[in-house]
Image (cartoon, rainbow, N blue to C red; front, side, top):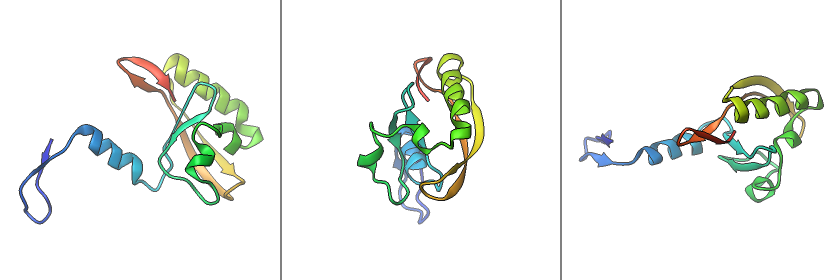
Length: 116
C-alpha cells in the first residue's frame, strides 16, 4: 500500500501489518486476544492500576467480568472458537469502576480459528 504524507512529501510504503498494528495500538477501546480458556495473550493497552506484565498470560477475561455475565462470556468464547460466532454484551468492571461494551469473536489464520 502506498500513501502520500499530509505535507505532500514523497509517498511512503507500509504493510497491512503496519496498518493493523496502528489500529490495534491506538484506539480508545481495549483490544484483547485470549486463548480458549480465557487467558489474555494480547491487550493493546491497560487501565490503571493494571500493567501489561500483570495481565499477559496471567489474567483471564473472567477476572474482569461481572459474576452475572460469566456464563454468557464462557458461552461466547466457546461459540467464537467452535462456530466462529460473534457475541456482544455490556459489562461493568469493578476494578476500574467503568462500563464497557464488549464484542467477542474469532481470530483466524489460514481459515482456522486459533483465538478469540
